[in-house]
Image (cartoon, rainbow, N blue to C red; front, side):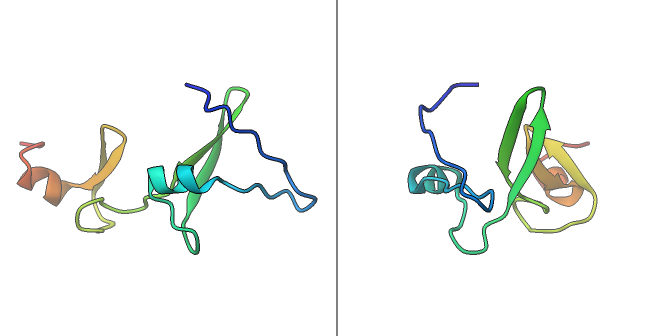
Length: 82
């Protein structure tokens, strides 16, 4: 993982501000954008939350392809599954 060199303070309520440049780069909306938080070894990971298929927004039969969530129907349309 490459460090970006950005340091932020944690306020007394435990909040941090994610710089606009990073929100724009990863497509995180300012109001209502969802982030998934999890830990890995000794790191806290923030990831844009995508609960559904990135193409049709369907939530059934989701598979992961190259770290993206895709429903089986869309995958079949793209000939990813046979």
